[in-house]
View 1: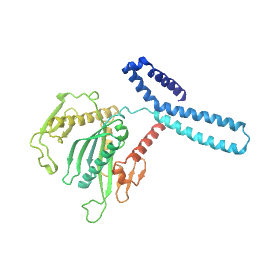
View 2: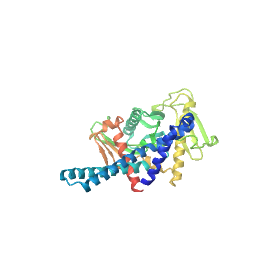
View 3: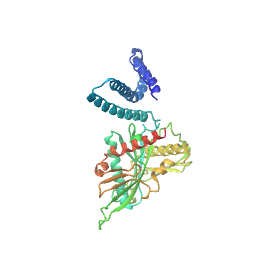
View 4: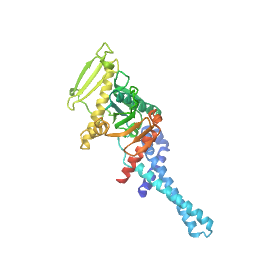
Length: 354
């Protein structure tokens, strides 16, 4: 690994030289090409140079150990060598993580679907809580969340809400959020003080671009209808709502949030494109629609990935055994602790396979 990194460092130095060349600077397309490659290599080179410094210090301390006779100095050198060896292991692991094959979708924006599962109105209200949690997290990360479609209940919860969260690296952070989220709390309507358990499903799909999915207009069936609000009452006097059916796959998307039929169609196509892309990606892995179905599951309480227990102020991620007693902060969008732990876990698992 380290002999290869020496060659990578040589390439990195070469790129820096090219980017200092006046002729290259004058040719912006060429300069940008070198700058992108240099930027990609910078993280691993930074860690590699720290590792080389660490090994140099280890060698120097080993020489002192071989030549020194003073007991106090020898004790100090032994302690320093021990610490340097620990640091070397940490740096090696960081380098290995950086060198792991990248998920080509990591830098993409996402389409997020949140749906109420088991639990009736309480599940719908928790779907609203999750919507707010992810929206606040997106705002903290300086991403741009946009509602593409929503179906509200009479009490203000969501039967379903579909979001487009735009920004750099959104999928890399949110891709492990897909699955069944379970809530345990006393509903506002509960007079006996009993704790109810409800479930909400979350699906995360990388946003697809036109180049990823070719959609033949003749494969689409587009219906227009009047928008309706909670309880089915009409909220618009024109046929602005749009239902798009992709006939070959049977996928259907409805959008009615905008007053403009054109805007609803545009939002619907974004969702459809993401679903078709997800479908195609799953086919390539020989399991039709595996990702989305694994994430959503059945919508019941059994296949949960995470539990939110309000009485104990506790959030537990069952996949990695993580428990946090910061439920209020997490629901306010402070998700870094949970998401970072998931990323580290799956990176560690990937390293075991290498």
